[in-house]
Length: 473
Image (cartoon, rainbow, N blue to C red; front, top):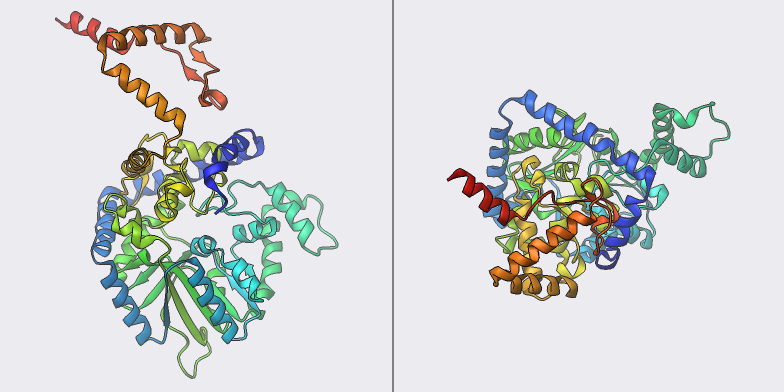
């Protein structure tokens, strides 16, 4: 983790001051929010589908260990080797050992947030394995040596000019057509032509898993690019790395969740590719890997499960809808959050998995407007969990000293009604004086660094309330 405890505010300031980033982030409401709204409306009773998805995920969490054991037994019966990893270090050791024993020198990787979480590429590099990202966005980020800014659209923060510059620097192309930098299809074709030979030469394919199906021992991959299937079928070894919460009971349950996932993530009724992978190739056939492994990662998830207030976070199906609808994420993008999971889900997951000391600012990186909960396909109560984390922070004394002082002062004043009324009248009058056309462009504490503060128009709330009651009598 890059140290969210000290760089979040600095990252926010940099994001707000970056005009290119702001133009890129302005696409989110058009591309994702409107797309989800259309897909939900076209489906019909989308709320009933959300309730069904929530019920499936809650059924899993009620007996998470049992469903995982059923998945393990079914997968092993089909020739899959299942590994359990308590943390990132153990997961990396398992994958590195598999690669070493198989004589792997090159690996191709499909998009996987869990592999980002454990920093797998660096671990494999230390083990002598070159790893190539094959999702287009992740490939661009690998060239740029950056983390994803979004869990579904990892390069939402970049424009075509930045992508073209990376390709120009890293690809050996002696001659290109005029205007190639503006040709999005051409840029995609160049990436495809660069990556295709790597699939054929790779010994190891690495993927995540959208769902683990206990009924059949299968993993389900949902992608919009063909790279996922190439990674999992062409190399002689396939490793799927995923969190323990991804298990679902049956294929029917997975189908229900896919209907929610694609509509919530990209506004599609179904993604371009939905793959079910059930074991290595059968003897005497040529399709599929010779060996298939599944690594089940805990890395703090058991601790999250053990906390009833935060357990619903494990329902998450990684659609990104919460961040798409979050006004904070829309303003700053993903990198200021400091780890691989941004937006409201990251503001719960990061302190939930890593501890509040690792991310003290993230529970406050939200307006609590509730849009994330309304958009969540499995109805995770994100605002409630953010409040819970704030309460835990306060109870453990982790609040910043200025915040402690402010709340202590407010509490002292609130217990003295006369003084409170006098103080609020004076504060309202002062704020009116500071306002310019109803907006205040400077206040202490940083609120107005990236936005204005509305100046009060009249009396305090209490005075307006008394006046309304008097008028109604």
